[in-house]
Image 1 (cartoon, rainbow, N blue to C red):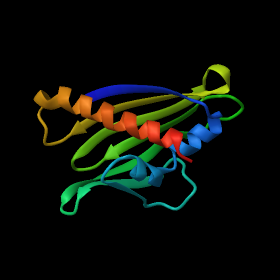
Image 2: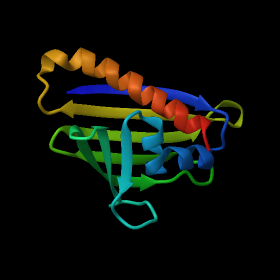
Image 3: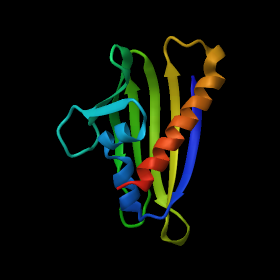
Length: 146
């Protein structure tokens, strides 16, 4: 099991940074070879479920997730979303926090605990590096694109 932390500052107001990071289908556009499907009706809130399907054809896997904490930013206060990963292959959780940053910008903190079931702990350093790289690029893309 690996844990990692990503931090970014974006030239966006809190509500816009939050919107860009929590529109789940957009994550599929930000992560190569991934498609995200929301399986519960809108709006997003606690109990929202979605599935990230990664891979090519039969060489892929599903990463089902559920929103277990949904606190959008309001009145200048930080927003926090917690996702529980509930798949057969990928387990763990992710937290997305959006808080006020310097000069009216937004500070994004992404925390994640990740376990890939068939991988032994020997591969944790490689998994951590790959996850930080992949999710770091995804966060950058999500914050840059409307």
